[in-house]
Length: 391
Image: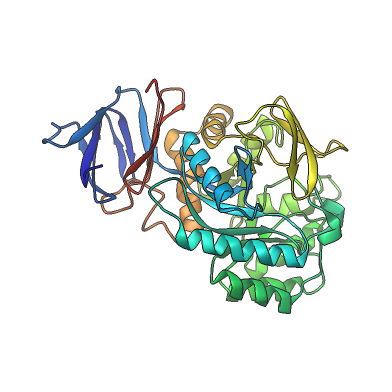
């Protein structure tokens, strides 16, 4: 594609407001102009209807896999399959999420993904921004779909090896604050620029609040793999909901969370402290059947992924579906949904100066959706990575 091109016609959702029937000009992979509709100025121009939405590229902060691929597959082909699948749902950036496994396998996976991330062609699919380690310093009482045999108490020597191997690419780690040395673990992660995320935890309200007061301000898929709220045992969920500092991940699929709970979270946390995720696994885009997640058999039927015992095992949720659900269930504005599905993730990762909003000079990472939030085009670093055939 030429160094300069443009899109004209849809509503643009920029950092400073909407532009109805707007135009966006891309030059050398960056946003060069945002304005009301204008002539194509002799450059290639795509035209979309006025009721379409052009929004910042979605960022899936917590996703395991899609289209048969999983981030734990030590296979460069799988890495690229996932990147190319995610653009179909408007995702332009994501974190490769790793579940629990043996120490040796985690080391191999970190080494493999670090190489893949460093060598990725950022113009051919969604950009992998780093690694999300879901464990292993978590509670066996709240294992969810993870294998408890690989859960550990904090091991700083092991963690040092992993951090050195990843060369700064471990961005998030889920941990249970009730474990021994959890305070020291939080400080270690913070010192290594890793977001410490409360999750897969059986912690009481008081223990969770203590960790929040230390500065921990993130939660892995709120409500899931945590004790439910009880009026005499409010637990981690209540502490995370009430603390204005805490940012919480939400799986808005109607399976992990009832729509009313999603609405409750939004009302309590607001647009700036919610991060919409999919937690999707390799069965996304594929038919019902038998699959694998973190070394466990997963049965998928009617968009529900479960282990043999009925435990939920990730999702088959697409990010544009989650975006649509959030708006429908909470009655939030499109701008508020953009914050929850793009801007907040960019801010968490310290990348908001580059991605997460439409602003001149930022990366040309954006998605065009129709009036029902179906993805019509996804652009990564100024390159059209996906275009719906009937779009």
